[in-house]
Length: 260
Ligand code: PGA
Image (cartoon, rainbow, N blue to C red; front, side):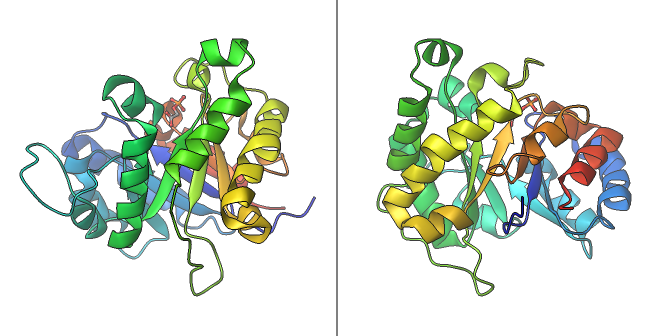
């Protein structure tokens, strides 16, 4: 089946890699990833490593993303990083990752503020949605994902980029699949995207936009299961955690994402 959306594979480093460790990893990533065409690549290191990693990515085809940010431009918010600060360095910003929702009190409302401020700053949000194990077992996956999309994107206006692409990425990450080694099946993930995620996007932005937004799968993606997701018609790449910390593994995943 032909997919018109360019796949994206993004590595979420989480709270791993000092600057020194990042300096060891990134040259291997650049060497392996830069020549791979037909798929967009991004890495999202911790804040402290963004500047040195940006320097190492200079001239390569790999984009940089942040893992979080505050929604205000500036102010007395000790310990926070603003959208304008992130935008000096990055193309993408991950918003509403389930670890932020679970451990740092993020809600659909704060996620919504962050998404809006990402656009004001010129960043492309990677909005994470996904149900917990309990919600999954209670048959609430659709309800949860629809709520996270609709509230997270409330009052957002999407303007297509010059090339016609839509500056929004959704990552469907079932919470029970993150860091557990227990990925969803490709088919189940595809069903969540086709049954709940794209229809919610269509309600908000219309059918054409909903079909242009890239929707990634995340949760225990590795080289050995990546193609199961990339072969699905509604899945346009992956948000990769643990496996993005090893150059060989991440490069192998990205190769599977290249469109035939
Ligand atoms: P994982 O994490 O690949 O380690 O499961 C994915 C994520 O949290 O984005």
